[in-house]
Length: 496
Image (cartoon, rainbow, N blue to C red):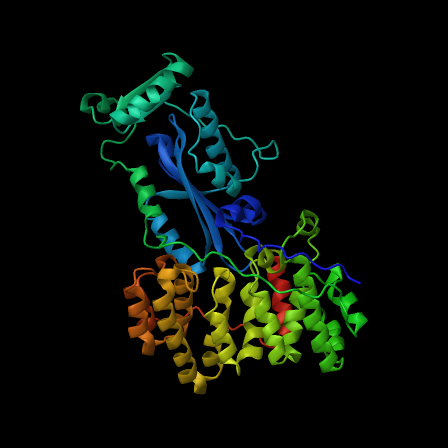
């Protein structure tokens, strides 16, 4: 008899900070920038951007004082949609910056840190997180030497008396008298500092620039996120399937990036009743293995997930019960989703949920109203519903009324955060922009009036209204519905 599984408490979702620490270095570098005049004025920013497989972006910005203090400030932004990233990049590049290689960015940052540490000054506390947006500082990174300080010395440019009082004792302790300083409030002393700038050049307040970036409405946070509280049922402890060949195919590491057309056709030629039950069993069994804890060796194995194949194939042979199984996978923690799907959840779920849920909007509604789910999994139910109207224009009114009920529900529940949080509301609006849901503007306005909609996802109400009314081209992508095309697209995405 199989050993009964312990009733394990639900695992806490992977926080943005944990994601940066554990996984950011696995994302490829997209681009790096630096302030053009950093060597002249002694202060500037470095941006490092990494790209997710599904055209999302994570970035970190480092405010450097190369004259003395090293990394003065730093922050990151996680999983930005392409249009958010482009809008942010336009704002960032509105001041004079230039593109640099990653090696240059790495050496500027770590060189500034090393120079500041000579004076006993540590990098900003948030570098404890954003350092993981950089590669580990080892000899594998080619060394580039830059000049730090001014006239060969540490040169403190204090913004106020408080900053002067804070750093002068540290500098004296570590450097003796071998440093210079200036207080910007002191006009006579500040004249010396202005020599490092062109007389006709406008001084850039980089600290204020950083504050503007961090407090931009694009990234403003409104209220707490949903606390993940889902308690899962018991899942099968033994994998009982009728089609044994199915298991060997779906669990084969060689099929990591997708099934061949031949394997797909061979599987779909199996009797659909037994195939459907087997696919559901595979999903529930493997979910039971990974819902509470994912061992480190599984993370490192990189063998792919049979659940991905099962979700693809269920889209072809599934029924109403299969929809319940698919939704069960979306009730899991973010760690579960990161392990099985990475950043390809939309590509994996949208077609399958569309196929299985297009005639069961009631079940999708019930899921949309559940409490305590992971926000980034919860949101995956909205695009398939919007896609019903996209592919079936005659059903637009039905879809609009579905979203009308959700908007009213969200407006009521946003203060509680456990059913709808600010990010879930904002991300849902992206689908309504794609739908050009002009009919729902009063309900959208009412939801914004709560003050609890995250502007990071879609902008403020005025921007959403303008986008719905005036955008000629939405952000819709035509996700392939035919399974061979789906696998072809999946293989391309895994290669990125």
